[in-house]
Image 1 (cartoon, rainbow, N blue to C red):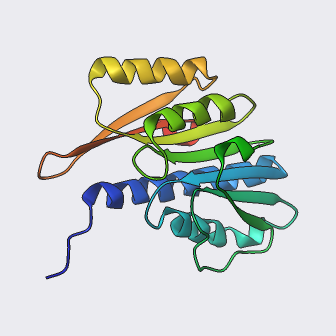
Image 2 (cartoon, helix red, strand yellow):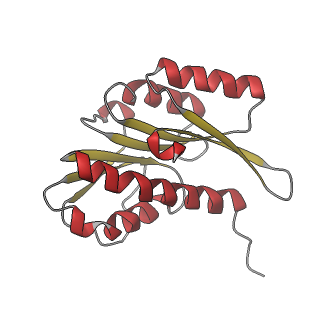
Length: 180
């Protein structure tokens, strides 16, 4: 009998794909250079590259940098105009211009590392993050929103994902695409 896929991963993958579907055309329309950072688990990087491939005709004249934190590059075609690199040490990560980061506490990063990256990456124009965290109380979600706001990310949406067994994950999104 095949093992059932983790329902949280399935929903998070769909959430990420939809976020990228909204984010990518906007960033390609208004900026010459942008960065997507993936620090999740599973096949999130491959899914992101597939979404970017759907916009290959719009990549001409733009630079879209895809950075994989603590991960190897998936075996997929990389469209022209898109660069793909891996970074093992968070301290080596630098970003200029607009950015979207998918940071999963419980994947390649633990929660303190996620918050260090949010603080490091958030300052600047057009910065957005999608965080996946352990379940949280209402007070903790309020604290998370305050931390995001203090980092320079004003708007946030929190979604708690629960499966049939009662296991939960928290997804926090910040940015214009989250609010559409």
